[in-house]
Image (cartoon, rainbow, N blue to C red; front, side, top):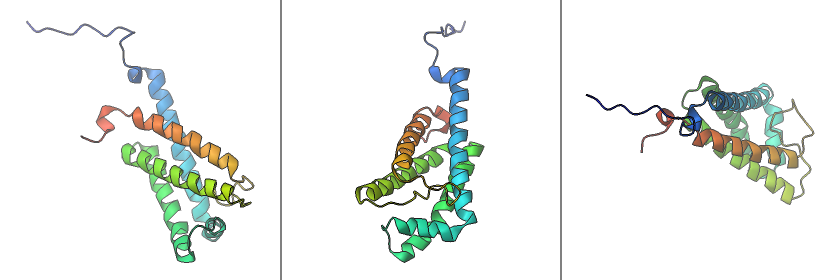
Amino acid sequence: MEATEPPMSTLTQSIASRPIFRTARFLLRLAIAALFLFAAITKLVDPSSFVQQIANYQLTPWPATALLSVFLPALELCVGVCLLLGRWESGALAWVAILLTIFSGALLSAIVRGLSIDCGCFGRSIENTGTLWPLIRNLALLVVTGFLWFSRSTKSRPAK
């Protein structure tokens, strides 16, 4: 005779297995995906404007600025697609955290240096955002990304 485990009570049921949690997590993942896809597409549509927006930060020499104006939107597009499809979620979330941290550092640098620039987060589609509100938004997105990272199912976590 096999011993069977008693059914889990509501109190001991994992929060992650609740439908409301799974739905909220799914919607947050889609929101981050949509945000990164929108950001990437707006930059890819007008790369000459985006290269100038990067140059406005005065952080990189021209060759690096030009390279970043092509590389960043492509990376944002890849990350957005991965999150949208739910593929390679761990890697995509790691890149989201890395990108948001770098973008936040650039915004903070602009604030400290008193630069009056547009963040360039969404190309020329959304202008006059300044630097403070985008920094606050990025920090909030980092919190959401952390939540998504730590609430991944065990099957999507890298092996130890």
